[in-house]
Image 1: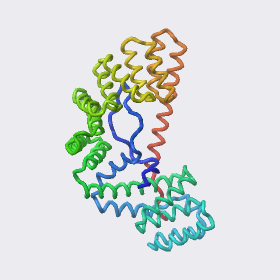
Image 2: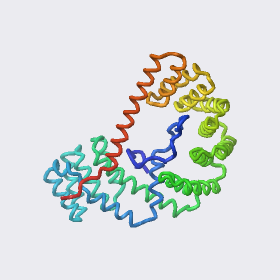
Image 3: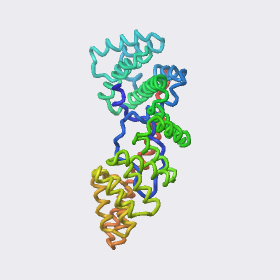
Image 4: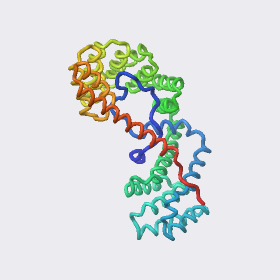
Length: 354
């Protein structure tokens, strides 16, 4: 379904513990709706929740839209509140004939469509509203809510049609991870693996989960099985190398990271981890080379600047060390501001009708 492509800012991604030494993220090659589909899917069987969500979507009203709306839209909004959804849709559509680029009209149309259970047309209207006003938080809010509802419906359909399909278990596992319930996540991943023993993706996911829990021997076993099935699998090469780093086996980590970079040479995090491994081996100049390569690919890798500062200091390059440390601190401040802004946005809810 097309709605997945427009997922803009949804629930937090999987809550795997941040690792302190090597980089912890693989290249971003996951399909965009996956995490939201999983986290929403675990609750999809609670049918009353769907109805409540529709009501929330239908009757929450953005304050600034009430202030800016013309008489036609104001009448349409009153019709929506009165349960006259067809009238609200008609008024919004008629208003759009003369104002085709008015996000407020598109938003009203979308809410009327949602109330009528016409979710795909509602999505299309919200998508157009977002294209016209990408920074409109009310549009983003309704898009997020609608995509959540659609993903719930899709998951419910999947679970009813194929409850033992490995993807069903995989989505449930990712849902549990989103809530930091690792025990149940592991159980679902194991069920997925039982249903599809040759799934490299599931083996890698179990390896990642074990690595996040510092169960490195178990993680290495899963990664080895994945690599045997797919020698060109980046995730298993990178994950195993990070296990070796945590086990202070820098040489094997270097071998694994070189293999990962042969598969994905543009992986900034693999260059970062390789630079870390070189520094641990006392190969400072080689480490600096890899850290610079990581920053060319991703200038915002804060940990690379942290490691560079230490490497430059070790070589007696005081000015370079000071510059790297300053950049590290600058990125730390930006991260703090971004986290604060994100918390404010997630806590924000549209105003109730007055």
